[in-house]
Amino acid sequence: MRAYMFINALHGQSLALTREIRGVAGVHAADAITGDYDIVASVAAKDLAELRDVMAGVQAISGVLKTTTCMVLAD
Image (cartoon, rainbow, N blue to C red; front, top):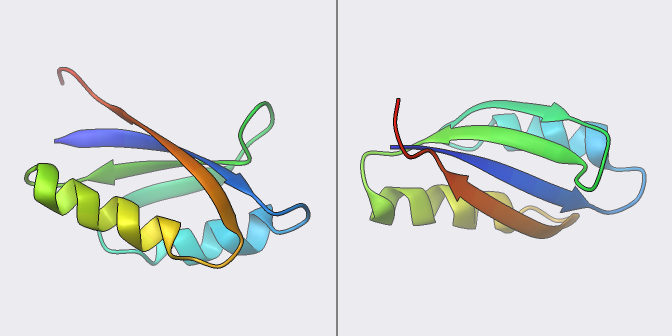
């Protein structure tokens, strides 16, 4: 399964956090963006339990304020 995580970061930390998020297992890509969110990450997992682990790994990073995860319905 695939999902996109939209991430709000502490002011001024988007670029550093993007690099750190790229190192989380299950994160395939992460980019700093403009708009309502600061970072978008593309993630993949074999099931919901693994997706929760990926989400928890991103959420545990200092400077991550909030995440919104949207699962891909079909490839």
